[in-house]
Amino acid sequence: MSMFTAEHETLRRETRRFAEKEVAPIAQELYNEGAEIPLEIIQKMAEMGYFAMVIPEAYGGLGMDNLAVAIVTEELSKAWLSVGSVMTRMLIAGGLILAGGTEEQKERWLPGIAMGEILPAAAFTEPNHGSDTAGMRLRATRQGDHYVLNGQKTWITFANRAHMLTVLARTDPDPNARHKGLSMIVVEKAPGDAFAPPHLLGERIPTVGYHGMKSFSLSFTDLEAPAENLIGMKEGQGFYQLMGVYEVARIQTAARAVGVAQAALEAAIQYAQEREQFGKPISEFQTIQHKLAYMATKVEAGRQLCYYAARMKDEGQRSDLEAGMAKLFCADMVEYVTSEAMQIHGGYGYALEYPVSRYWRDGRVFKIFEGTSEIQATVIARRLLE
Ligand SMILES: Cc1cc2nc3c(=O)[nH]c(=O)nc-3n(C[C@H](O)[C@H](O)[C@H](O)COP(=O)(O)OP(=O)(O)OC[C@H]3O[C@@H](n4cnc5c(N)ncnc54)[C@H](O)[C@@H]3O)c2cc1C
Image (cartoon, rainbow, N blue to C red; front, side, top):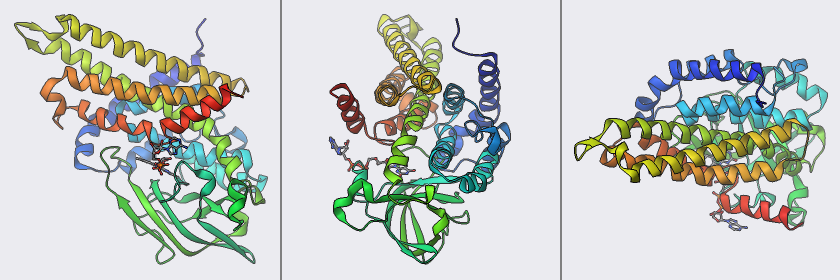
């Protein structure tokens, strides 16, 4: 029996059509120019309901499951990783507010996120604290009816276009408080490269790939956020709120990797059938056939692991182990598959003209963001040894 409902199948068909018609034709050229995803694409994604997927209907969402999110993510990321990655931000902000927010906060922010009227960005990483989340230093000091934020964040992707930053901040200055001293505070801002000077400054971080969305280092200086923007209205919950949302985010990240890997696999199959050497298509060489076989097998294994974790989550089971495994496996898988796809393209694979060079550069980021592979493995091992 198929794990997919008719709704899942329709969703895949419609998303594939959207991605092939609207995204794939423009992705390569814009990527090579280092351009951001056009705002019209983000607008269309909102109209397609992609930002509303897991938000309950009561808050203006579609109330869909995580398997549906994996399907949509895979199809969008296959066309352009950055497009599949816009959704990650809605999942994180929406998830944080849905699971930890007060009723008033849910009513205030969730409908806007679902409609694409509030675009969020996730501001967790700091220059000196990446994997060590519990050590984050950006300070939020309560002064009457607001918090004053001072400190640095880095790698904050989409911060320029965002209307809202979910900022992990230290509300308890005691360094021994570690993760117990962290809170999640929503900072509202106008979209645009100027951020909110002089209280919030941003500087772009040039990157190897993942073009389409820009990442920024951010400086907070006496930036004020209303006290009612503290998610859950209780200090010290930020770390737990973040860990709660990581499960879903990692499943979606694994699905992003599957999408990029599938694109690389399909490009490699097509190229192998077209390219001739020694008087015949290179697909007739057994070495190339074996490469394709291993690539396809690994893509499918990653996809199934991703779907499995999504289904467990949808059934209400604890799925942090499976989500971590899906993310860990798919990060290795996409690096392997995109590299082999480039190899099958020979010299042309190294040329910017061919999308396989994009898949390879984008594919490398999965072992780094949303928790490095080393941290992912540590978390998995900890569960196994419990
Ligand atoms: C393109 C891109 C987009 C990003 N977008 C965002 C975003 O939108 N929001 C955001 O908050 N962050 C974002 N990040 C940041 C990302 O989540 C961090 O880079 C990641 O968590 C790793 O932190 P770090 O870079 O400080 O590396 P470090 O934590 O300094 O790690 C360096 C190396 O040491 C290893 N290491 C660290 N601790 C251990 C340990 N205990 N055991 C074994 N090995 C260890 C790591 O695995 C890694 O190999 C983004 C990063 C990239 C590259």
